[in-house]
Image (cartoon, rainbow, N blue to C red; front, side):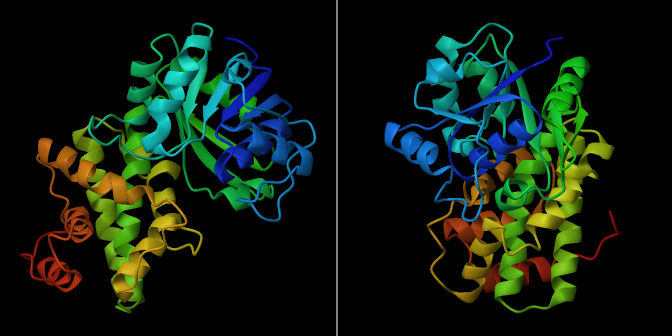
Length: 326
């Protein structure tokens, strides 16, 4: 397996910029791709990204707006939002060398197709080697070099291990697994459940209710994961339970912020993307296809679509028949 000396990050937003720093601190030769020449030039000149305040980009990271240049790297990290992943990989594919690892760094399920992120990569770039990076992390923390642990999944054990060695450092610790579907389900489902947690906060239902919501949400995540063939240790690990806890409790969580606004009856913030809003309807369709009961996720989807009020959703959850834990 290649030593993976060079890394390209596609997407010069906050997360992409933070990941470029991760790869540079790991000793890789890094290029960061921005869609516009203006953005590339600005970041290159200032060594800063307006979307990531207070963080400086490592001097060794090169900027480009040329996809062909980015495609020459040994590893490609796709740091676009989940719903833009196919567009980015489609543009990248004609320039890729066969068997280049392409790692999705977004958490979600594609609208319309119901495809997970590695499935999108496989369809848009058939010669690539798809992988997924997920786990409890925020761009600001990662960019500042604060200790972070994540999960990197690929179908090939040796590839996953080699990618971890290439990207890991003393402050960024990836754990590898071959349970790709488990990592993808954990990353997607937790965004929807974080919206529910935010609604609880916004309605001031109390810490006990938030703890109960998070715990029952995790049960949903586990049920769906098992139905889709995921391993229990993955769902209870960093990319499942760990990510859920962080997203349901941190002020940095965009999905939590969306839920808080909804709970307060306020207009949701539109300056930051909350992936859970797009994932919710797809997630419940996936659950239905697997005959998995996900009442919290169903309630979030109904609220977001306008099919149910928050009060009605809360009542429906509280009046469900009593059942055994699990």
